[in-house]
Amino acid sequence: MFTIHGIWPQDINDQPIDPYSKFPQCTRTTPPLAQMIMPSLTPILQDMHYLWPNLKNPTDTQAKEIFWEHEWDAQGKCSAYPMDPLRYFESGLRLTQNLPNPDFSLQSTRFYTVQDILNKVRQDVHFGAEISCNRNRTGTVQLFEIHLCYEKPTPPELIHKMRDCPHPTRGRCPNLFDNVYVP
Image 1: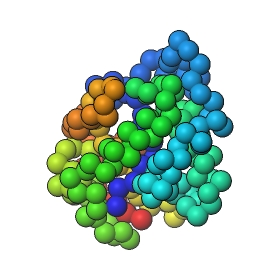
Image 2: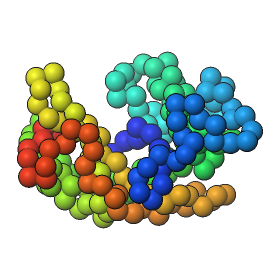
Image 3: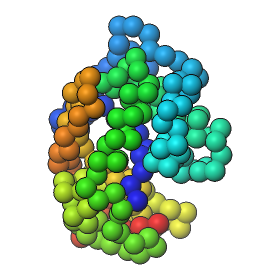
């Protein structure tokens, strides 16, 4: 199943939006502080727990909240909704809920070629994704993340148009015909 890690504001060429950086100053006003956003997320918390989990610690509620606060600080303040944490997180949930096939067709604990992974994601969501790889403890190259690309949403509605990502791989992904482990 697809879940969310974050929504990164980037341009059409997949480059971070300037001045998106470690010190986001994306708005002329001061966005809500991360530690103040949890009360505003009350209407969507059930969906957040299911669709935007903290995969490092999925059962710890406090760890989830810290993760969501981090996502707000790192990306939400530079999103299309810099003053509205509820809309930022709601937009991410809606992206996942509107996927043509939210159930992922790759089986875990198997190897696939990079091209096979990209083809299966295209089959599931009907658009070209970008995959990111890393190495597990034994040094095996594994699938780390799947990035889906969207056009900038049109406020005030949460309208998103999916598009092909400009780069098929990122990180330590080998060439398209090498094998990658799916954990």
